Image (tube, rainbow, N blue to C red; front, side, top):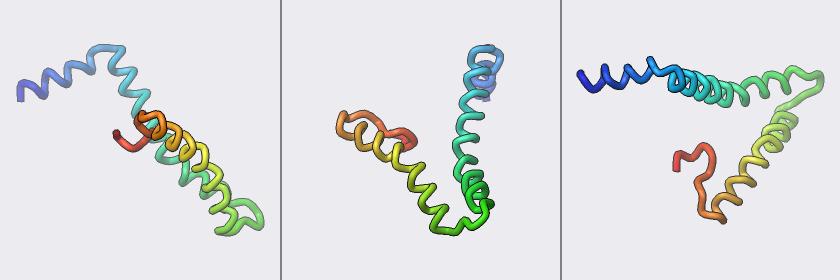
Length: 82
């Protein structure tokens, strides 16, 4: 239990607290973006599942391109945890 309290002491450091807050907001925003995009696209007049599929594919292309580039240069891909 002593180690846990020591770890919580990190939150007293203002720089660490700001970093933790920024990372948390960033991850939550990245997680909600596809859902918001889906509602936004499907809310357009005349939008169908095919429209949503095209938009989500267009969104994924830059990420997959950077992942292939990163794999060729032997660096970690964003969001893969490696």
